[in-house]
Image (tube, rainbow, N blue to C red; front, side, top):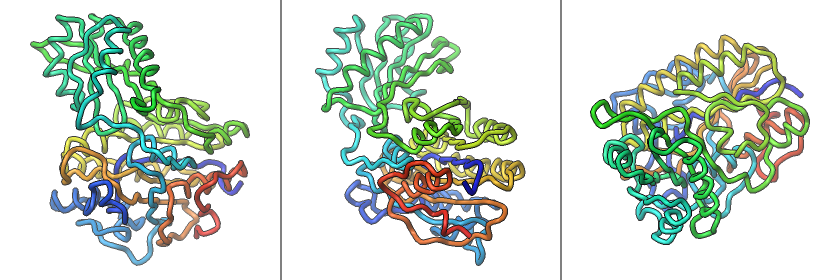
Length: 392
């Protein structure tokens, strides 16, 4: 292997402009990083800017550079979709032909809700797309008084069930989510994840979701590079929701996080430890807190915080480390609705001994999987061209 360790960070939803087929997804004209920058008077990203971010798309405050300090390029999504699981699975080598079901506009079918009520013995309220905090303001008190289940979704392929921990014990909530996961294995109801969303608090002081969230995800449709690395006895360490997205497949160690910044602090701490293999990180706040809520200013500040954290992380990298930063889809905070957007994603590839350059676009996120597979000499994926020999 050329590099002992690969650190792969997914800055969730930070797209760099519409893909050629964006109109088919209702996303013509979307550009997450470009539009959030122009909507907020520019964004300050000295490290990513020096790595060539402004060479990928027009970003107010981040001009193109003559000589990027990283290898930088755009990746197109080959799969049919624009959701979290589709994007991450493709990053690790899977092409998804049939997109996961979403129920953003309609809520879940009456038949599904009735079956869930029948099998759990509890009534369902909500059944719509909503913010996890707003739904508790609306229905938290009702749920406490009635013992009903708050069921809601988002722009992602998810069925979320919220319940007060003092009203429905965690063990029961988890069992209810197992039942929902079983129901949602039917093709017409199949969602990527069922999520337990326990909360505490009261109507006077407010409600707060607890860290006892649990995801019940579909397993990947085939083996990924994560499985190949694990089978070859390499470390595969996940940070953030990576383990949930892959339903634990191919993961050897996991670290939960509280925020983007916490994720970067933990990533830096892990880099200071000795391991051989892949450190795979997801930073979800960009998407969950700012993209879906159409908060361009919050998104900008989160990007600037990430750039500062990245500057610190780079100081801890070893000479035989390869750092890769990418995204899984777009989520333009200036766009209509609250859905993800079909965009190219950036890929930054950095090592202190590489000079850096702008590389041609690649036609699949799986270029990342192929690069990792070639580096560690494990089984290649069916899709994507390794970039290892192109790096300079």
